[in-house]
Amino acid sequence: MGTFIQLVVDGLAMGSIYAALALAIVLVNQSTGMVNFAQGGMAVLSGYIAYAFLGMGVPLILALVIAVAISFVLGALIERFLMRRFEGGDPDTAVVVTVGLLTLITGICGWIWSYNNRQFPSLFPGDSFPVLGAAVSWRSLGTFLVIAAIMVLLQLLFRKTKVGLALRAVADNPRSSSFSGLPVGRLLMVGWGLAAALGAIAGALVAPRLSLTPGMLDSALVYALAAVILGGASSPIGVVVAAWLIGVLENLAAVYVPFIGHDLKIAVPFILLFVVLLVRPQGLFGRKTVVRV
Image 1 (cartoon, rainbow, N blue to C red):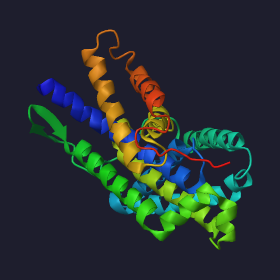
Image 2 (cartoon, rainbow, N blue to C red; image 1 turned 120 degrees about the vertical axis):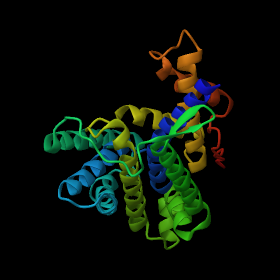
Image 3 (spheres, one colour; image 1 turned 45 degrees about the horizontal axis):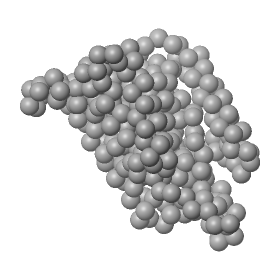
């Protein structure tokens, strides 16, 4: 039982990393209707920005606040001067642009800070405490609670606030939103800025666990995209639950399913994804889209 609980705890900790990126992807999708493949690179860049301020002697909390603020501005500028040229056109073109942006950001980070692993301090203590025979680290618990809080805040943003409802309206139909008097351009910038700021938080949570490198979130981005599809791109709660589910099932399958093991555990989320999409194409928590013709 102790081993089982430990696997679940570790799975929830890894799932929280996937969830952090998945929430940023959902934020862009809900506010612009796009899937941002560059989200992992933007989160890594935010981590390096915080790392640079730490090197100047700035306290950790203040460095993270500065990184979040700079990330918000960078996200808004990327939308205004790059992505806006492709919004409203062929969605495949916009996706290719975000993939290129991911490559560009990763290359810039490697060029400036090199590809060596760098240690990033954690917001939470590194020691553990026992729970039912399992060792739970304060870092894992803190990451879990932060992601849960962000999940609730995003759900409230999109369901209960005028800004969130306006962002969703712009994503669904920018032209009609413009005719209704909504400032579409500013709302798109806000959406990308908020996603970049959330990516900065994700980078700060992930870097102490994985060590700071330009490609530290490449594999996590794949899992995050799987969580978005599995949970439903319209539901922050859904993607977080899906990310936690992926992390836990991956760990359990690696230990308790002999033919999978640790080498094939990467296939677990995609098998789960295949099964769920056969039953619910909109994802576990997504909504069906009804189109009247």
